[in-house]
Length: 223
Image (cartoon, rainbow, N blue to C red; front, side, top):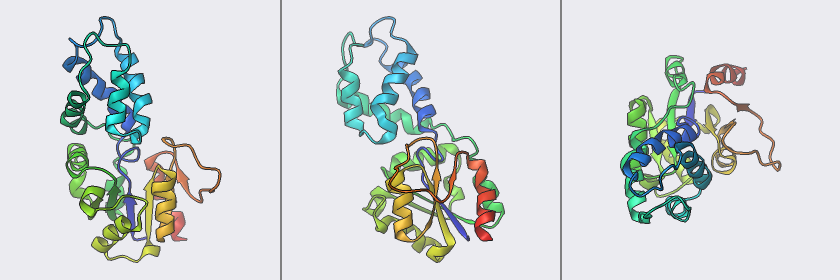
């Protein structure tokens, strides 16, 4: 293997931990709207449930929250969305073991990132984590005009690296978007366990549950 490509959310960014951290800002911003005695832990649980690890959609998550009986005066969907985009991307929590990207770069691997999302949101997260400049290639769906698992976005990233498909692996949490998508494109997929349940229709050939396990797995793939 000569290159390692990563997903962002639920792979390099701990989305659940990031949401729990975000709720502290949310409580401060909407304190006057919330009923007295609403616990931060309760709001964290609601956000996590309604977010569905990033796949519910921003408006759906916001509307579900408004529908809860936690408000004296409910804010609008647009107010909640504005606060989310002004706050959440600037306060990401790194996945444990994120320093593995430095290890891989030192070991000579080219690094890439492929993520679905808005350019500003995803680049802000990477910048705040101090990792944006560490990638040799970055492909964000809004910029590319295609989302994982579409082959177009994988090809966009590979074009920046100029490395054959069979020398590239992809690490991500989502079964369809990351594992099956990268495998269908011709990359070596590695499932990052934890965020998404496995689909029994497909058996993962390689999987890790902590980023620190990646260097040893890559060494085995070389043999």
